[in-house]
Length: 399
Image 1 (cartoon, rainbow, N blue to C red):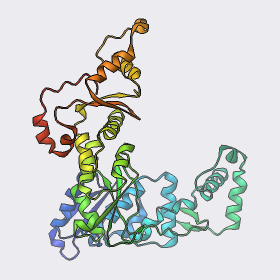
Image 2 (image 1 turned 90 degrees about the horizontal axis):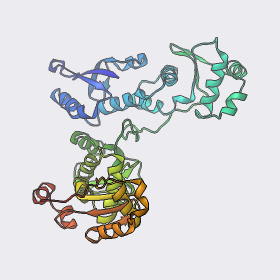
Image 3 (image 1 turned 30 degrees about the vertical axis):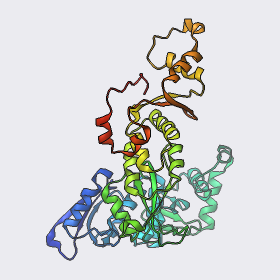
Image 4 (image 1 turned 180 degrees about the vertical axis):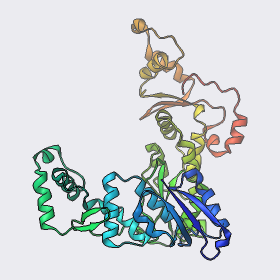
């Protein structure tokens, strides 16, 4: 974790704002508000003077007294927060070797510094050789390869055949590394720092198809995060927004229903908020409900998610017999005695129970809607109004 003190270089009398890095999602809007009070914090421009930076990364001290962009600084902090001890040395040594000073270059270096080899201890050449072998092979090697590797010889060849650069963080060998260009200075690359439901790419409808000019937002997000993502994409009119979904944690049925596209990011965000806390069981249940109800947009799926208690679900049940067995053995309605198993007519019970339900078999199991309003009406009307209308629902014991 880091802590940055930011100010307005043109108006130091306004005071300072202390920002935790990476910024916790539930504090993002508050941090933006602190900067807005100082008349800084633009979504795209580097207008925040970095007065001080409390971090474990000495090489970043060069940023002090320069102007930075909040989201770039936050993104860099997220990238570095995931680094190992080895990457800690690789990043800092390569920053010093390449004399990198711009935020764009620092961010890009986080995607390629792992190719470099940094020697901090010349007394253990076997370990140096092993690390170097891993570095030049993308961090991947089989146990057999490593067992057969002569680490000392590998290290000696590295030292004798290459010119290392002495830095404060060790002697660094770049191994032919070329600085990544993933970040163009405006569109931060997709990076999942913490668990989220989905990454959503935002671009203008004016952009050509398959354009790489995409700004990523990770749902669920705060209102401020969504608004700033739109600003970074240069979108002023919500009608000009083009969205596509990537790396979804929604049930597959939800992704299919959305067709990996959605024209309203706020509706999609509300859906992510509704599903975020779901257990694995509840996500399977939602998937089955979507298969049954066939919603057409994120808003309808959200209403299903918010009313999961109006559905009975028997996971893994694909026949009346399996459904009857689930009801008798696992639903909690009965005191099941395995010694009497041969006397249970599971199929008959399953069929009888299905006769008075509006249920279907899905790939995930049997699901039935037990609400009192029509299913289409449930998806169409406001959830608060619907809750007031639902009276005396018989739940049947399954969740």
